[in-house]
Length: 460
Ligand SMILES: Cc1cc2nc3c(=O)[nH]c(=O)nc-3n(C[C@H](O)[C@H](O)[C@H](O)COP(=O)(O)OP(=O)(O)OC[C@H]3O[C@@H](n4cnc5c(N)ncnc54)[C@H](O)[C@@H]3O)c2cc1C
View 1 (spheres, helix red, strand yellow):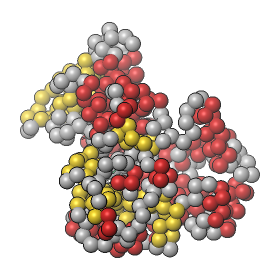
View 2: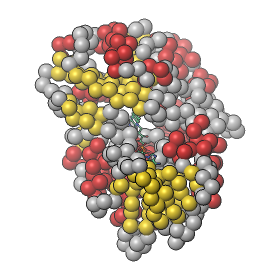
View 3: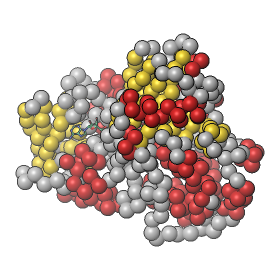
View 4: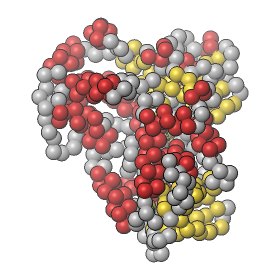
């Protein structure tokens, strides 16, 4: 790899996207400075260790399949710290009729499950016969699945799954932008099932695992963030420093704020790895124009993550799985419950269990904004009915995300186009992260790698 470039690069945002980009650019000999508004690095990744519990305030796990992620873990020397989700975590639950019902994991169990009725089971066969179709206009995920299968599959599979991944609403999410592989599957195969099977086969042929394992690290996801920080020269990350303005040019001038005072620095290249609302509030040029103001309209609903520790005997459920998700139709307060201490080892002290509860999202944004005490009251009936939890939890850690995950809604191309326009108007400025390149941690790592490659290639 060339170490000759020596150009100066500013990276704005020390989340996983920005830190991945910083590491890759540093490796290539660039002089890197990372600006981070918060007093700590990591962005959405926040791991805490308190009272013998290991708590993830943000993401809890990641899919270990993307080659960019595997290479990063290897380069950080963290392979031996990886932990794979407990084998019983293959079992997942969805609420139906007020109870957790296991999600079928094989063709046999699918036909026996009480989660879906006969019409949905039959629809799987007929869907396999669907002919290819090239849509010209985007469609919501709920509409697509209803068109191919049944409303029941939307209500009892897609709706809870989307609550779990996006804290989102499948009636609003765009197939083209949020699920491009389904969009493509319908075009190439007609049947979404056949399309997805073909995709799996193609992956296998490329030597990639069909279904990537779910992993974390012994000391939680923060390990990935700390791994990046350890590889960057001291002083690279400037915490508590918010970039307010970019004056594009040769070089680009950045105006930042730290501890109440402003300053500025010049860089050959600038990488923006901040969320939608951060981009929306950034001003460009000397006239203070908010060129990405429209990104403020991207829905990014609030989510509360509530980690609860219980004595084992307080929870009747065997907690023999990944956790459970709740369909909107079931009219519950929680979006889902993760069985955190089953999922990974050493997450709760001896004789105790840890659960992570998510509330809010597009479905019930106001629940996310409740105080810890009010939220605990609100979700107590769900905890009692779904996992048989009784009495006050022995430990509580509440993490509130005012804007959790950007929703790739129908019409999302207008936001993508606005980002492209700003990039084109300011050569040497590159924008990525979860507003543009996908919301999962592996997508953000890929985004960081892409940003680094583009910034490294840019001729000053
Ligand atoms: C509650 C929750 C649960 C999730 N669960 C999972 C999961 O289980 N698995 C998974 O794969 N993904 C999950 N995700 C998604 C994933 O965590 C995020 O999409 C990803 O971490 C985003 O990384 P990023 O670096 O792009 O942005 P961020 O993590 O948002 O980092 C951006 C950083 O930029 C900083 N910043 C913003 N504006 C400025 C400015 N003007 N100047 C300087 N700094 C600025 C911010 O302070 C922040 O630190 C979850 C997300 C949330 C919120």
